[in-house]
Image (spheres, rainbow, N blue to C red):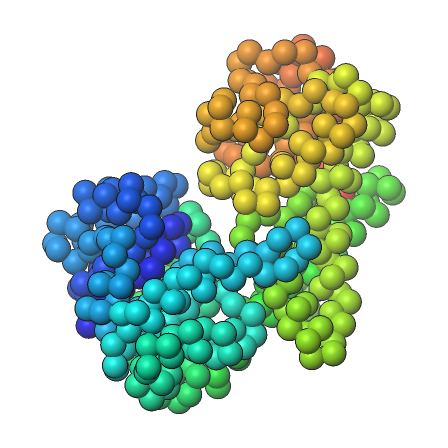
Length: 427
């Protein structure tokens, strides 16, 4: 078995390394020549992924992992093709298929009879059968007969890829029974986790979307609870913790916003699917509005204490959407920067993972923690480990009047003697 992985990003490269670690030859495909050169040198371009550097180096050394920009040739010599490229939405929630469509057309050019094609890229319900299959069949091969076609959603997360690949069951659903069987056999050979088959590719697509929408709605409920607690002076964390002692309660924690490629994006896939079926996903749409509104809510907490923000110096801690991961896709920080800018504030951003130039590209001034200017307020967006031990006395000396803790990293008690007003999300 020879495997082709298309897309060597934060998910694709760990998948390729995982398959190679099981002794199978893997060809990774990417349009970025620098990425290809790095992999062929045995070096992972993906950082902050424990274990990946060693797996890539070892696989290349053993001749089990290589990379190329020639996807057609890689597909021709492979038995299994795994596609993991981005599928995103525009600001109005419309799906942009351009990347996955383009990749699928290239796969069709090299597709061989008897091959297994797997989409791990999250697709709307019906996307595998109704959109991807017709493109692949331009190869003059019939899906489910001449080649096998499966949807198997990635259910992983950057920074814990190999843990998730080992612990979280793998869902497999094909366009027919033969395809599902081939998908099962493949994943049972390359993963250590349990592999679970569902009745169809549509069921597999729905599995991923239902899970993401559930999470988004749960976070939105927590955020509404947090707003209530802010208004009443309660501690939302205390109350959620007590509520979750009931085995039927599984409330997640509130926060300053939801970022990344999953929760802010995939609910729109299901919302669109439902609208086409005449179903109005009221909760899903409301949850998106609530979670997208949290950055504005956080800025409002600052504005309530300081009054007008015009000319005020505000420090935003964290540009990344998640702690200790260098990724800004739909990060709440970007929304916060815009809200502050719209109110006339002078915005400073600190993030240990980004250079000064990288931060300035997002419309804010970079600020080092050791040489801060006079600051009126701080908004913590990202729970980077570096922020867990800040010197509150130093912040007060810089003029900080209010600290908004967007991830509830601290507690009010830690700020009692600092002279700084503390506001968490619901605390």
